[in-house]
Each structure stands twice: as C-alpha cells, then as structure tokens.
Length: 438
Image 1 (tube, rainbow, N blue to C red):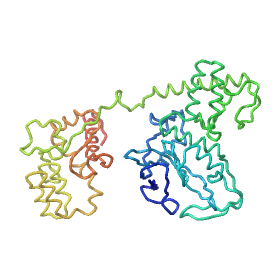
Image 2 (spheres, helix red, strand yellow):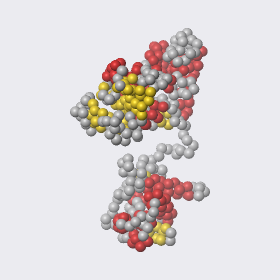
Image 3 (tube, rainbow, N blue to C red):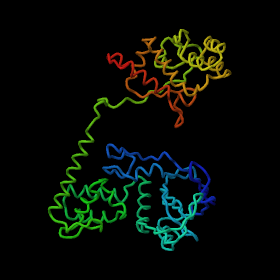
Image 4 (cartoon, rainbow, N blue to C red):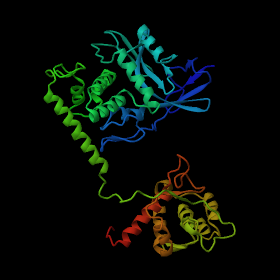
C-alpha cells in the first residue's frame, strides 16, 4: 500500500504534490515535530541525558535538531526522523528535504535505505552540488541559475551524516560519540593500541563534522588530531597545516584533555548559589474534587482548591470563594455580578457567569485577577496559608474542568492556577523570613 507523506505542522504539502512511496507497507503520515526531544544547556556547555552524543560543548547539531525533527506514524507506532536539505536532479536541481527515519527508511522522493541512498548519489538523482549555470528550483520560492557556485559537501560526507542521524534517532552513539568513547579509553590506558583505535574512530567521523567533535570554538579538534597522528607525521585529516607532530605537541594535547576533564568535574559539582540544597519535591496534584454532600471538616490539601468555601473580601465585597469572586468579576453586567456572588455553589456561579458578557479583554487580565484573588485568600485565612506552605517547594499541578489556561491537561494545559499558587507560597515564605521584597 502507499505511504502518504506530509510536511510542516501536519500540512499535506511537498514539492507541490503529495509524495507517494512503496517501501513501508501500510499507510503512514509524517508530521513535523517542533518539540524535538533533544535539549542543550548552552551556558553550561553540556547536552542533557536525551542527547546521545554527550559532548562537552555547545553543538550546532543539537540546535538544528530542535527545528528539523519529524516523525511518521505507522501501524500505530511513532517513528522519529529528521530532515536535511539536499538537491534532487530531475531536469532542474530541486532544493528539497531528505527525510531520514530511525528505522533506516530514507525518502528522497522515493523510499530507500542507506545503500539505496548511495545508489541515488552514484546515479546523480541526489546531488550535493549544482554546476555553473544549473537551474535551481525551490517549491513555492522560485527558480534561479547557479552563478559561481561553491559547495563543500561530498556524497561520502552526506552518507556519513545520514548514518549518524540514524544512530542518534535510535539513541545510539554516532561516529563522534564512538570516537570520544575511544578517546576516554586511550586517556586512561595510554596504550598504543588504543591510540591507533582512536585514529581509526576519528577518521570514521564525516570529514565536515570532525572540527566540531570536541565542541571547542578555539582549538577545534586540534588536540584530538595531534593524539591521532604519529609523532613525526603531518597532522592527519588534511585541515591543520602544522609542522610534523612532536612529542611536545603530544604532551600539550594530553594536558589539554586533563584540563578539560578537571573543568568538567568542577562544573558538574557546582551548584548555583540560589538553588536549594536538596532537589525539589515531586509534583503535588490536586483540584477538581467535588463533595456533593458538602465539604468535610478536614478537607486536607483540597482546601487549596478555588472552590473551597473560604470567604474573601475584594474591593469591599465579600465572596463565598475564589471561584465566586473570579466569575463575578469576569462579567460586565452589574446585576449578573451580584447573582454570581450570591450563587449557592461555585458550580452555579460559573454556570450563571457563562450566560453573561465578559469584561472587555478579560482573557488578557484574568491571570492578574486570579493572582490577586489567591493572594487575598491566603492573606485573609492564615490557617489555609499554612496548608499551602506545607507543600514546601513542590511543583503544583492543578486539575479540574476549567480552561486549559488554568489547569494541567496533558501537553495542552498551562497550569496557571498551580503556578500562581507556587508564587503566593513563595511570597508567604518571604514574609515569614522578614524579607522586605515589596
């Protein structure tokens, strides 16, 4: 059966038509995933655990991965992928996306695997450069002639890069990660066999990626090249034009890695001065619990719900609960505001408010209103404030039937009630500590 491919936030477009293939069996749809799983701490110069190549510096691949992640769903299974630009030579040179997936499937307007991509490169269907005067076409962008073109990517480089993409998509070390693992082994053993293995692993990195293997903007991969090169031999790789490697250069390279490892250890053990001495507690979830027969005498943490009957005075008016106050203030109808305030239950207050017009730009001011109401609740009810303080520094996940703006609901909810409760809790702590913050 055919495989349907779509691009760009679920849009069904690719080169002015839907792309069809016959490799993958059952129908599958590919969608761009702008929320790629990789993360990067540029300030600290470290990737997080989800980045399979744990390199000790900012890596452009991690940045672009966030933008270039895609996936397809086949037989109910999500298969991760990435895209990268290539040229397809079909009369003119089409600047398009090469789709690479974790299962090794590759789409270049046809479904192939890595060996198939090599064949497409050999026959000239996929190309990495355009000759002088060649017509370049980009869908819905335009056409132009190549004038004094300059390209630095070879077919072998592209194949190596795609092979690395597949490894990373499967959470396996790519060629750079494998090289760095051999480097660690050599630095520990200083054995010549390990150094020769390091040389082999280094040369297995796609040539255009070797400079980034150490993540060092200044030295680039020079220390690694020096270790990989025999003493008396010119630096391997063909990039550095130094004189033949000497024992002094080898000692410099070894000292470089010793200094690097020491700096990494210091960074790993460092804690920001304003961080808590212990990790934050696990998330506390509450909200949305209903008591049809009335609230119990001891409602526990549920007293933090906005529906809990704790009267608050706001603007000279007393409301039975935060929910009553919120919905009463939301309406532009003064008579309706009083009916909402007088509603017997929070549910009835909300239902009454739904039938009335909202204050102009209510969605833009509602968060500030809720913050003020929560501050009033815990300022006017010290016993409830103690319950809130009892949650410590735990994140608060607030549930219920309210708007996604207020609650947690999978990946959609913004949890503003939970976040505001954390803010009020912090303010209460500051007040107890006597900090003059306001």
